[in-house]
Structure formats: structure tokens, C-alpha cells
Length: 467
Image (cartoon, rainbow, N blue to C red):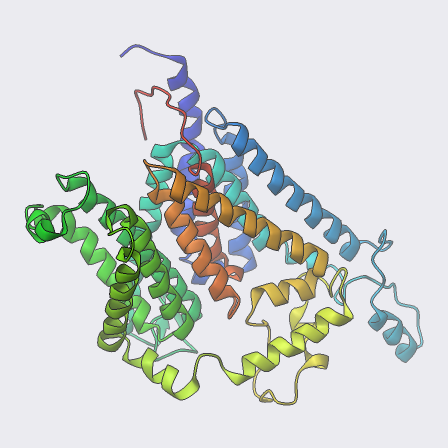
């Protein structure tokens, strides 16, 4: 085999690609990676991968996206400085420190955060997400690596779903090697919270559905689907070529329904319906086809909900769409934001900031260590300007992914998978804290990065060696 310069540079991408795939597959394993030690380990792995990350496939649009992420990093650095510094540039000191000094009768060094140095320890999860999306862009700029990442997420997700179902049937009181203290009647996989597990399994189900649709569509003989002979064409596909993928999809769906999460199941089914319609939009009748597809998808979703989601339906009947306690918690969080609009109470300080604002309508049982709305909790901890900047970044990301979905002919499945899971996770995080769990956010931020990279046409470069 004749050696070429691209092969030499390609070899440098092997460590970064391998490490990223390892992190993407392994992040959900240690109880959703909510432990500080696990987060630090993934940050170390992702940082090492970024050192070896290939840049040969990056083009001008990719560099603009990386520059945008750089703006987010700079904003984070400013907020961190203000919350950690003994002499912040513009942030006011929290009045709680002066109140404590008056009560104790001794001077106390003030801070812009209500808990000193907590922002430093809370930086791990955002840092891991930033590293993951940067690696997703650089490694996912190559279409083969981007597709492999999609398969890694799908296969690992099916494995976790299978474990979740089997562990629930065999020993429902255990999560890995620990006793399960909550959600004993629900599948949680390797996660602690069933809502996060539902979003994860649902996101993986979306990816499996897209992979199956792409494979089946590619095997059909006609350029456009002939619906009258569709079943005959599909029947000619060898079962061994599609049954493993269908089994993986079924396992993910089963695990998702067995979580009993209302928002996780409902939003996952919605993402699957919309994604299915977008994949087949060019093959549908021009005027009514999209509505027929959406209606049919909704009917199938309702059927699955009745067949597999009995516990989900019962929770909808008994508790409605949203718990009253969450609504009151959101109102309380809005009051925190109103009193700390510019730099918040400090990153990672919500559980200490919430008690004085806790609504009397909320049950006195338990401790609220999360707002059950990531955007509101984020704004309460870092302030409105930083929250608006991140919201703008999300809006730009979704617009770029939409450009890839509607603009690309080949590999449109990659930006579509990223757009579907990004929308699912964002909507679910408005009702819960899915994106605050690194075991979920790290794999899918990497996918978001690959989707962003593949939203633009891939430059064709000859490679004789692939991993």
C-alpha cells in the first residue's frame, strides 16, 4: 500500500476518536456520571482527546461555530471571575454576607456568590459539555466518523436499555452495585432519575428509528417510494439485515415506557413522529402527505402508549401534565432571578438559594436541590445576561441543524438526529433537569457537535484507511 500524507495525519485522529467514542458510550454508566469524580474523569478524557483532535476537515463554517463557542467560554470566564473573586469587577456582593457578619459580630469577607467557591466545583458539567461539542465538531467534520458516533450512541443506548429492563425484572431494588432508594417501580437503567432515563432511552430510540428508515429507504429500488408496492419492496429485504436494528429499537422503546415518565415518553414520541415525517417528506403527497404522516404517527404513538405505557397513562390521568409542586417551584425560582438579575446567586448554589423563596404551597417534605427547569435554574445561578447568551446559542444551533436537515441530500440523518435529540432534551429540560445530568448531556452534546459539522457539505478527501 502506497503511503500518502493524508494517512499520516489521519493516524493522529485515532486517539481523539477512540477517546470520544469511549466517553460517549461510557458516560451514562456510573449512575449518570453525577459524581464529581466521574465528571472530572470525563473532563480529563475529553481534554486529552481535544489535544489530538483532527483539524484537517474543518472549514470556515466550522471555525465560525468554534468561535461562537469561544464567546460562550469567555462569558463563563467572566461570570466565574465575578463569583469567585474577592474583588469582582462589576458584580455586587451578596447581602447575606453582611447580614452574617452583623449576626456574628465579626467581619466576614463578602462574595458575589451566596456560597464561596461553589462556582469552581460546579464548573465540571458545563466544561464537559463544551469539550464534548467541540470534539463533536472537529471529529464529526468527517462524515465517516460522524456516522460512527451515531452508531456508538445507538448501540450503547440499546445496551443500557437492555440492562435496565433485565435488572428491573431480576432485581428491581438495585442500580448496578448500589441499592435503589427511589423509583422502585420504574426502570431507570444506570441513571438515578427515571425522567432522565426516559429522555435517554427515547433519544436513542429516535436514532435507531432514523437509522432503520435510512437503511430501508436505501434498499428500495425506486428513487421515490411507490406506496402501492411498498410492502412488497420491504418484504424483499432480508430479515437478518433489519431485525437486529428493530430489536434494538424495541428494547429502547420498552425501557422508555417502563420508566413511567410522562414528559420523557411524550416528548420522545413527538420527536419520533416529527423525525419520521421529515425523513419521508419528499416521498409524501405534496399537499396532504405531511398531515397524513403526522396523524398516522400520532395514532401509532397513542397505540404504543396504551399497549406499553399503562403506568404513563395512569400518571397523566391522576396528576395531569405537570405537578402543582413544580409550578410553585418555578414561581419561586423566578423570584430568585428577580432579586439576582445580573450575576445570579452563584453557579451550583440553587439548593442553598431556594429555601428562603420556597412557596408555602409546596409540600414541606423533601429538599429541592433542583428547580426542575434547567433554563430557570441556570438563570437564577448565573444571571439573566448569561442565560440569554446561552439561549441565543441554542437558537443558532437549532437553525444551523435545520439548515442541514433541509439542505443536505446525503447524510441528512446526522443533523436530523442531532436536531431531534436537541429539541427533545431542551423541551424536557424546561420541565426537569435532563441536561444537568452529564451521563445524558455528554453523549448528546457530542452528537450536537457532529450534527453542526455535518450541516454543511463535506469536503471530499481521499482516504484509504478508516477506523
